Image 1 (cartoon, rainbow, N blue to C red):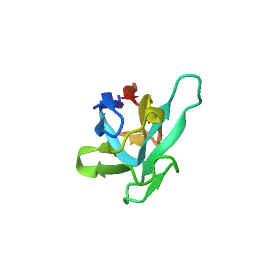
Image 2 (image 1 turned 45 degrees about the vertical axis):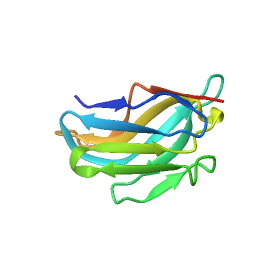
Image 3 (image 1 turned 135 degrees about the horizontal axis):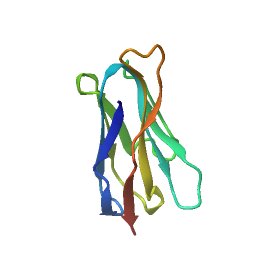
Image 4 (image 1 turned 60 degrees about the vertical axis):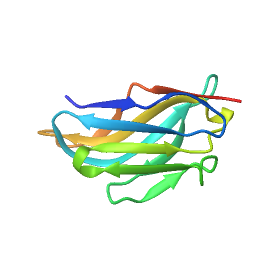
Length: 121
């Protein structure tokens, strides 16, 4: 059984920083892309930052220059360093990873439970 566990959310003032972590655990054969999505109240879930197993990254325009995604392949962990936070960054942040479990012929998307990030003005 594969699961993603997130940590690091919280309340921060505008201009502050937070670091999110997400670790994949269970019977994992391989992990491909990992990343972060967010969903604000009344809005659709949107992609924030993606990182491939080779380290290529992609960011939403709204976070470029402020957020940095990284990963530790040995630990099956992805991080999101968020700097210069703005009130509009307030949302539930979800970890996502494409994982192939052991003894399963194909991978699929897995999601974390979500962690709340609140930025006060």
